[in-house]
Length: 480
Ligand code: ADP
Ligand code: ADP
Ligand code: MG
Image (cartoon, rainbow, N blue to C red):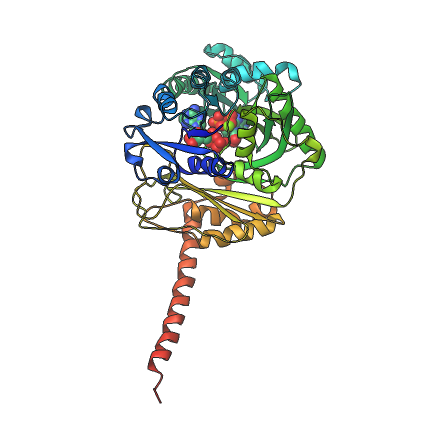
């Protein structure tokens, strides 16, 4: 493998290219017209414009991307996450053109891309599942009967859903019909597939996922868990590894279950098996993401393993260079997704111009970044600017470092989730480890954040005033 085309943009494109370069592999970026001067374009050895700004006219044009790959003689395509990464037809077309797709076979992508097909595939592998139905439902009377049986609240979910979209909680039977209709029409418009199903709504869960890795020689292992319970709109904002709630025996049990899920679909490469963990520490299979996950860096830090390097080695047909027994967790890692979103305004996207953009650095700090000062944040794509990742010997150390790193990250021009990250790091529920997926709903209001920001601003102003007075003294010193 001499040359890889990275079919993505932003921080993940750069992240992938960094490892390729380290391995002596040339990199090709693709970009849309609005990304002409983006850092991922500058970072690559070669770059090719693929189309207009809307992703449907650029980053999602599978056939065109393959044409470009052939033209520049790339041997492999890395899809990153989002965009075409979970598109089974794309993966298949890549391979048909004798280009290596750095990811699983299209069959596994297809199965796991449908939450219903996934449940069906893992059924005979002894995987605990959230109580509910395992087929699409459109008959309201039948849905009511099932809901009564599993008990309210229930969750209506789109089989093709992703990115936290396509879910509706139903508290009582009288709401079921209208919510179901809404869920179906939302699923059709968002995913082009109106299949919905019903799951029991687990009332106080934690989101725990397991990183898996499988080679083409029949070896499948797991690289422990990530805790991703701090979410807004069912989407992760802060992730960490390891989780404070897993005992080593539960970790082994969930890890083994995840490996069985991978085996159920003949998985190859890096993947993530997501579970919910209830208050009694029962775990349930949610879904499998057949790609590199946004939050993969926390796993890299606690295992010392470069997951992109492993993906590339597996894609080249190499054996996994270690066994399960050789893996161990060392230290603790935390990740904050730095989104251009306004935490004071319902986390709505806050795109604009990056007037000031300075990322922190130092021991134990890693920033996977896709932006630079002076850039505009395009409205066409996911508003994530970077991932701020910290690593310490202990969880306390990683949290402390995160707080400090947030303070040293200066962004002006747009609102970001940095202040929200600070709020979480200082909250007792988070520091004590006693939280679930409802953290934001339970503890977070813009007013609390505003108060914290104001008191910080006051302290900063006092310090500045003090400094001013000191400076004045110096200026006024009589010269002898
Ligand atoms: P992760 O656990 O890796 O964060 P997410 O579900 O948040 O997974 O998705 C990762 C990326 O892919 C995000 O940029 C998200 O917006 C995008 N994404 C995932 N699924 C979909 C989907 N079905 N439709 C649109 N975007 C999606
Ligand atoms: P997506 O494909 O959008 O990532 P998931 O099935 O992974 O969908 O669920 C995303 C999030 O939604 C979970 O992390 C969790 O917070 C919440 N969720 C999903 N299913 C349930 C459930 N049955 N009970 C409670 N919360 C759930
Ligand atoms: Mg998920």
